[in-house]
Length: 363
Image (cartoon, rainbow, N blue to C red):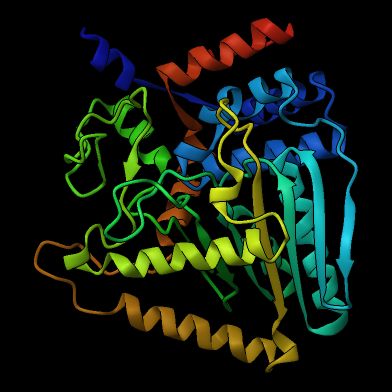
């Protein structure tokens, strides 16, 4: 078996095993129990929905290692810099983004419950994982949820040769009367940086159009090079309207970074350790019954999504889906069969267990 084939192999691990291990790892590093549980849940929720690039595979490199080095503050002091009945600006004191995001989204939901909508921008945080996890917190409250984050520069502006933007994802979630809720979660670049890591584990070449090498040629090797990557904005190139992804990434930078007073991704470039760089976030919650009848809205959403699914598909497409469908199918599979882990992720988790003197039984 080649090294590439070995890397592409997976094992399945129970959700409860991985969740318990993540909680134990965060607690061992000084994270309070509630924050550790929230952080672990953020990672597990990403894995359960099939966002493997933002789940337990990143536990060590993006969170444990920065906590060990002090680049992430295990016990941050939450500071409210500005506040109104519907808004707040938070300084996260270098805290773990995985738990900071949960707390900030909960604050947006509390404000929406009181006055109809809540908007929270967060400065001085760290990498917060999959944006969609936070947006979905609003669903149980009959609210529409919004979350986004900026990162250090890894994405080229439209027509540019040097990175000036982060992958800057946007997530929106809306409830339905039955079935799958609407959950949209996407980077404003062609792909997130984590997609390259997934392709590397699978032994696959990156498609042309995802990014460029340092000499501005299409990048095919998904392994991260010494100089990082130059990922292209959504649309890929000027001919295919890359200005759209460029503009969306700027919107994220404005709402997360500029509005919070921290500045855009250009102002918060990386510190040299993955996950340890500063990051800013933006969260929103809108109470549906502050706009219209909540039950009517949810039924309209269900009808709308059913009509889209009924669209005749192209000849080479099995069926038309809506955002949230694939995630719902993946959740059911992983509840039954466990979360798949590539072998490099397994070794990474075992390294964490050894360093922190924790038990990890993956079978």
